[in-house]
Image 1 (tube, rainbow, N blue to C red):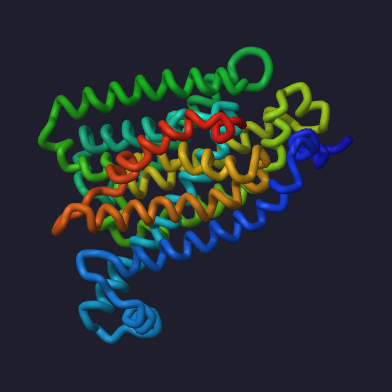
Image 2: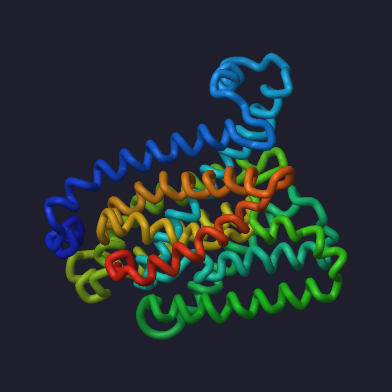
Length: 348
């Protein structure tokens, strides 16, 4: 028996109607993202007609509308696509790895590691500008994930989902406490990083997209490779080994993918909750527990959700803007309450 048969017990319990629905769900997710991208480019403090958007994309005439589209809205939308896709896919991988439907990428210490590294840089290196946060945040996210995996690997056998979860929670709590302590020691200095800490894709420094895009690309490629072994891991370690999956190697691949995706998104936009938690739930409701479909559909639904939340944040408070991290939390919390009451949506 080879690894390709690992998904048969999962797929075999599914109805023909669900299998027929998946391609339609994928097409619907692509269409949803296209609508979100158009809305993100058109809607803001000044609404730009679709005809002006199309003409701006065809050529730059130097008008205020074209400047706004080229210099602000297109980069902001592109960053939202990268961040939303990264968070949603890494959320799906985390829930599959830990077998916990309420897990999110922060469970592996990624967000806490990024925040702690930025806090150290602010406190001891005098870092004050957003463009200086990016490298520290990414390095902190990677270091925290590596520490969680190494600590969870101690002892006999490969790191289990329970050990990864407990170590991630413990290390994340320690790093969060240290970050808060540093912030309390110098409130004025740490006040400068409040927008990054709230989560935003607006006014990011030039070069942010280019800095994270290669890591996001590698993470997504690895996520697609890990989708089939993740189906086998959801059946339990013994069954996964019986069908030829190298459990330790598969878990390491998933952890690396989550680290690259969530670390890049957090470094660029700050900690954003609920996207990695909600989107896999919504997608799993339609696709069932087959990660060969969950991962690609999350790739489109995640950025669509983030862009719609960003657009909502631009228009809901009059002349100002709400950070997308705040809007996602406002929308996500009630939706999450509904989801956890729906047994079918919570099943892995």
